[in-house]
Amino acid sequence: MDAALQILFGGLFQGSLFAMMAVGLALIWTTIGVFNFSHGVMMMLGAYVAWQLSAWSIPLFIVLPATMLIMAGVGWLLQASVVRPLIGRPNIVLVVVITTLAAASLVENGVLEIWGPRSKQLPTLIEGNTQILGVGVSMHQIAIILITPVILGALWLFLNRTRLGLALRAVAQNEDASLLVGLNVTALYGLAFAIAAALAALAGIFMGGYRFMSPVMGADPLLKALIVVVFGGLSSISGPIFAAYLIGFFEAICSYYFGLYWTPALLFAVLILMLMIKPEGLFGAKTRGLA
Amino acid sequence: MSGLLEITNLTAGYGRIDVLHDLTMTIGAHGNVGLFGPNGHGKTTLLRAISGLVKARSGSIRFGGADIANQTPRSIVGLGLVHSSQGNRLFPDLTIGECLALGAYTPRARAQEEANRERALKIFPKLGERWNQKVRTLSGGERQMVSIGTALMSNPAMLILDEPTLGLAPKVKEELCRAVLDISAGGIPLVVVEQDVEFLLELSQHLYLVNHGQVAAEIKPGQTMGHADIMALYFGQ
Ligand SMILES: Nc1ncnc2c1ncn2[C@@H]1O[C@H](COP(=O)(O)OP(=O)(O)OP(=O)(O)O)[C@@H](O)[C@H]1O
Ligand SMILES: [Mg+2]
Image (tube, rainbow over all chains, first blue to last red; front, side):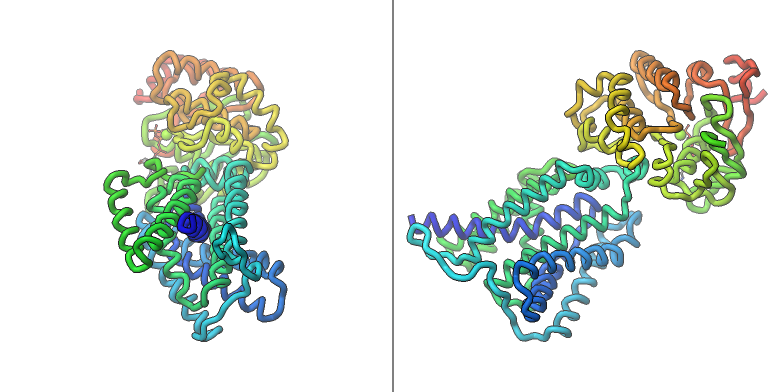
């Protein structure tokens, strides 16, 4: 009983973090067709911005939306500076890998310069711990487990039930046709980056509340998000969301029975096996498109 | 003059190559306009320049008095100059209903969305039956219907159709020709590129032969012009 509960909480918690990171990556891939290797530093920068705002003793319920808004702006700028000028190039996927990696290293060093190397910690979303059926969990983790599905559900509704969301899903599928119905393609590209960065920032705030922050804290979550989208398939955002929780549970089970040390190796083994059997991803269709 | 599309000394092309050379043409003064000409001589390029997808290197394009040369496609469709492009793949992963909803994206079109949807479904009842089907699973004819239907949703003041019957089997082609005639009868002025000269003659009173990126011949209303004359124009006397 204890084991099952611990795995359940661990899986939901990790899955939430993975999902929050992965949807942004998937959103950018499905709208623009590039991989954003700055996604990890967007998470990290989000955590630092939130830390700075908290240090000015702004209350958390303002820090949260303010950070997401600021980071949405940063995401927009990132897109305008290192992605938009390259759109239309035949080798755009590779070039953007390089430009976003460059931007990532720039941001990383900038953060180091501004906030220094000393590790910091964010306040938790909700303080304290609680017992659920005899298992101790922090309120911070419970908050993350509960907030994430709400945010992801809102994103899903936005993409599937609003005309702007429809435009975001359409723009990747046919640029000329998008232009001919009057979509503002560059603005939609900016919007995809803005949403992705805001969600990454939220993940950063989640993480900064239970772990020490550092300028490189985004590297591992970026890798995990990449794994999640490859695993879940890139044809939709629901695929990566399911995959995120699946991997969360897989990790929780592995680390419970085999220990943290073996978890990454086992995860990669499963990933490679799955890619051999179903290269388009677990829930993926063979094309790009968002739903 | 309102409703008139005037192209003056237009030069446009791709990369280092000019496709259109100093092309001048007036559209809308004498009803529907039909464009024809050999493959690869710039008909599609002309239509793309009109709707802002291809840069005009020199010359002017005026629609209803406003200069639209090198405006964004978004502002051009916003004026009601709507383009259903050649061999349109559309949005493969959207449903028919979603495609039509996107057609009504501009504020101008959104105000008329209900009426335009009704009109599109009246002309293409099949779209209503397949409302939730993904575009990628449609046949060529059905896809063409979605393309024109989406254009109708943009509330066109003038509608540009680039080869609406390209590659279709005779029966489906017949269906689409009738639909295009219906649209015209509904009062929307058309600019149509077609290989099928018979259809073009039935639809339009005003024709241009586009050859080597220029207007090689113009047939105005009143000038009777039969199939044989057109063929003579096509292949040179
Ligand atoms: N995207 C492009 N890049 C470079 N050249 C192009 C492009 N599109 C068309 N062309 C060239 O421009 C010329 C005119 O092509 P266009 O499509 O305008 O002709 P068309 O009259 O519409 O022909 P068709 O009847 O086959 O549709 C052709 O030589 C074509 O190869
Ligand atoms: Mg053509």
